[in-house]
Amino acid sequence: MAECHRLARLAWKAPVGGASSKGALVMYGSIILSAAAIALVAGSVSAQASCGAPLGGKAGVLNKMPHLKLSPSQAAPQGYASIVGMWKNNWLIGGNVVVTSIATWHSDGTEFDTVDLSPMVGNICQGVWESKGRKVTEHHFGWTFDTSGNPTGYFTLEQNVKLSSDGMSYSGPFDQKYYDNDGNLLTEYNGEMQAERFTGN
Image (cartoon, rainbow, N blue to C red; front, side, top):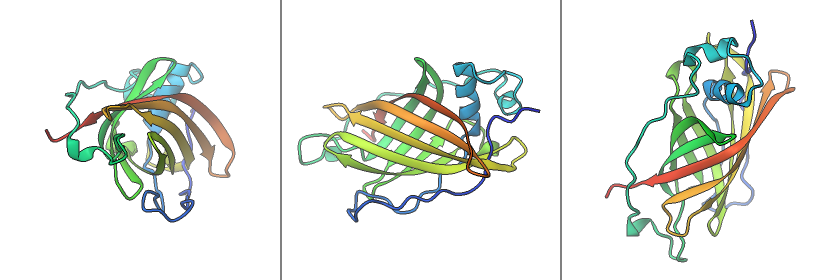
């Protein structure tokens, strides 16, 4: 039976420098079904692959969420908006949304994400980030599991996004790599992240 991805070990990332906008230790929850959906869209994995079965052939469920305006308190003093806050992320491969997540970026340089996938396979994610102006670089490292919950390897996710001038959206490329338990590269996906901000107003 084909396995889409393998889970293994926790990958660690120490921040460069000591500024408060940089995180410390990162553990990223599994998003194996997103990888399965991405693989299906990319055409590199058969729809019969075991990790794609829980999706029933669908690449995630797209949810409509309200677009809310930016609160003045969330704007950085330099005149650009800070990424700190809550966001709806669309993960695109070849122009198609394969999964959607809700991300919360914290002022200490950490980020928390929940993906629209079953908690059975892991839908909680964490990362570290740093910014220069409106450009933000983020690093994720985490576990992958098969559909029985067995560890199969790990993955890394790198994204480089840019905030819009009004601070209401961001977008940019991401690169996601999956490794087996021995650290061998299994597959790599490149796509685009597009996000819209939520606020309490």
